[in-house]
Length: 194
Picture 1 (cartoon, rainbow, N blue to C red):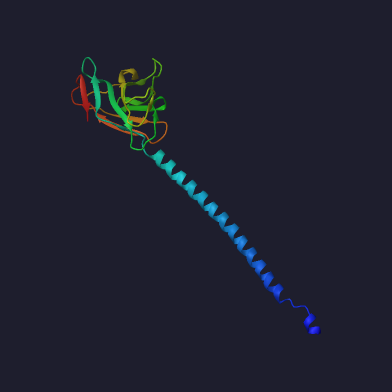
Picture 2 (cartoon, rainbow, N blue to C red):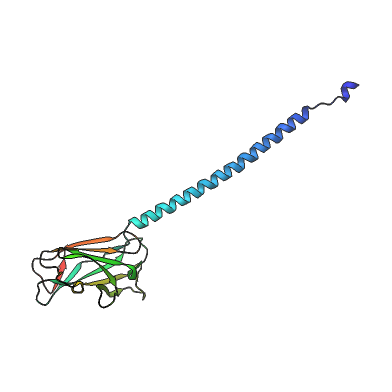
């Protein structure tokens, strides 16, 4: 009779093992959730870094068409340069108010040109806009005709026959776009620069 009333702990050992197993499973599930969350966060940040890098490394504007130049009255030097700018494929809008154009040539030290600068400052102007929506942003499907007045640089600086010159367009975001051209052997009233 005493054998029947003795305590048997066989069931409790199995129950304790089950509780410990459930605790391990719960801890492993929480740990894996935390690890997956950290992995997703890291992946998202890596994507943002890649997209930002691509946006900054690629140019946002490109040349659309030819670069045109006008000669002075005596046809001895180039007075102004006209070019057409548009967005690159997939590029974001470019604010021309914050864009710089740097002009350099053998006789011209690099000069920063700004849109609508004061009358006494060197500037460039938006001569015309195509598919315009009324602002100074180059948006998708818009083209801006830009005229750079080289006479405004002043001094003895000029672009004469056979001189090479460079225009570097620096938008507020993205890489700069460089245009290199050479003046023709004889200056005309209107010229296409190749």
